[in-house]
Amino acid sequence: MTTINGLDTAWVLIAAMLVFFMQPGFALVEAGFTRSKNTANILMKNFADFMIGSFLFWMIGFGLMHSSGNGFIGGLHLFDWKFIGDSNIPAECTLIFQTVFCATVATIVSGGMAERTKFSMYILISIIISVLIYPIEGHWSWGGGWLSELGFHDFAGSTVVHTCGGVIALAGAMVLGPRLGKYSKNGQSHAIPGHNLTFGALGVFILWFGWFGFNPGSQLAADGSANAIAISHVMCTTNMAAATGGLSVLFLTWLAYGKPSLSLVCNGILAGLVGITAGCDMVSIGGAAIIGAICGVAMVGSVALIDKVCKIDDPVGAVSVHGTCGILGTILTGLFATDGGLFYGGGAHFLGIQALGVLVTAAWAFSLGLITFKALDKIHGIRVEPRIEEEGLDIYEHGETCYNN
Image (cartoon, rainbow, N blue to C red):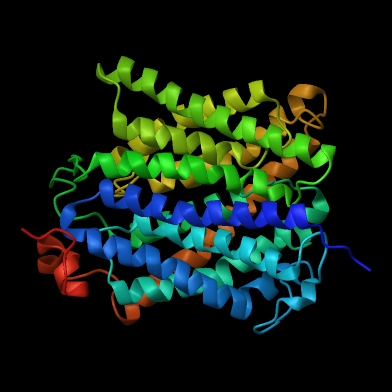
């Protein structure tokens, strides 16, 4: 008979609360990095993501992701979580911890589609992510599916959560097109400043704090010296990557632009956090510092590439932070893992599996996302009318604004 451990359960529930607290962090980042006329819409989308994700992941997503299946998809367990059984933690503890991760994926997508998406269409997109796109690819890595059998390692979700959300955001931004005024007729990019960098910075602090539940909580245990050492190590690697991600961007923007950019440093911190999430349990603190710095620099380059070369409008940098750095962090785990990594004498096998896993997951999420956006755009249209976009989504989509004189 399985014995439920009280300390393990308390730790995982506290970690779930910290991951839930990342939702207001995402909301503040997205609201702060965009214009005031769309703030109510952005806050509503962030609430909707968690409400929809909570209900639908319980209804169908949890079973598809975590029950035994054919290696590609789990079984259909409508409104049932008990199939997973109690382990060192109750089945309901597993359900709520996995639920908060599901809600994060949809929230990432919100940022890349900000300021021009119909709220009704966004609801449908959030539903499809929660019941189809995320649970199936999540099963491959975390539900006993084919990637996990190959030895693919994604401790807390650089690929499963962040890459998935980032590439879906890319598909959405491509189908939507840029915001009005973002590009001139000759293709020159024009910055559209956010209305409140204080909100954005506070959101990043909250996300940094919440990541201490996201990564260490994925140990799913705290009792005993082995677990105590593991979660302490993950906490240190997570924090170090965030710090060096921000520092690398601080110095890069200072050298490149003459002044250190607050908005890019905020995203540099997030880039480091996303990048370390796959291998936070497998790399050293020094390795984490290198991964964070690489991801910070890569994020800056990715933002410039997507904006100025690809002409894709990503208002908050969601594609670069979560997509680019999720992919990069997963692959870098194959280099810096102290057990099996290429730089530690493990050869190229583990690196190859990491590359395969992240690229297949990205291809799945992007393809399904693109099909979804194209279909919804064809059937109903996913973008608001130009007049609504110019005057702001708050009044037209929700009948109220966040700021009143």
